[in-house]
Length: 203
Image (cartoon, rainbow, N blue to C red; front, side, top):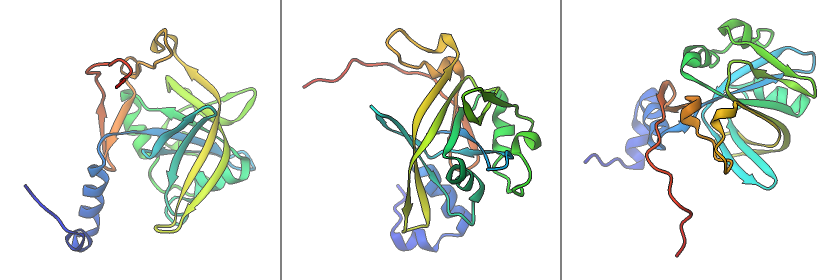
């Protein structure tokens, strides 16, 4: 068994450290966040730091990297207060991954990677048409994290769009039917298969 100390971790080569620490937390949902700026230029970016905060009200959070590393999504959300989160499926993986490239602000990742913008009449942020599970959010709070200059972005769900055969009678989403993918590290993607669904645990 390998054992590493804080000193060992700090002395690792930068990309080795990033790969290991990003993998250490395990499989994560990978999704595309769709935004547009104040003049209507759309943006699309892949994130694997999206998580459930609460169901009533329905809140979802994600971690945005420092502004100098990933400025466009955060700036667009600050300007418009709206965004979408879109699941990724196997046929979309390479295109979704390409959105992590640092395109200039005047370039839309939708156009560059070949994914399709889809707008709802009552919501001004772009969805990904190819996604089978997607939802729209309105910004509630941005919390700066001083330790590493990242941001916790909290949004309230305003609309959910899901293909019908994915929803079970009790509301549970069978995401294996949608083939929603997960990620590990910064560049590896996986299919998820169910093992078991258990009853609510009681003492």
